[in-house]
Length: 163
Image (cartoon, rainbow, N blue to C red):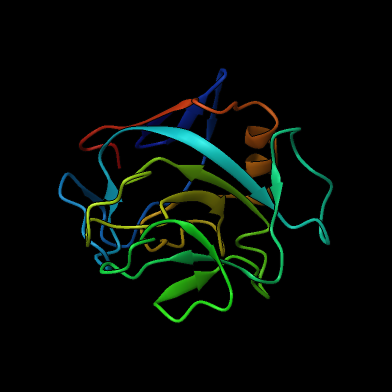
């Protein structure tokens, strides 16, 4: 997968996408809204089993207690955690459809550097062109198409000046 100014190129297609409100950054930090430049790997796929069938045999269901730690000082920073969880976190099971299907990248994972950013996902966008908090977002049909073709270890290349 290659992020370009026209979208994400993969398997002969270019999928329109949105990036972080902070643009692209070689020096990602927690809360800056930037999409990190570099070569990342897809390391997981999460989905809402109450809203869809598993998109791939390696996809893991998102349950009501599933969270992602964004607490830079916590031992499990930038890790999938479960409620109850007292440190800062993001709920993976949301009322809106943004995280119905999530491809997890290896940005700052599995051993996270505190404050370097967390939860860099590929997920559904709010609407065309609407920026994310650092993730890369797609239309629901394009995200489903992508999820049926990527495998664990698929490379995501985010070059400088891609957007």
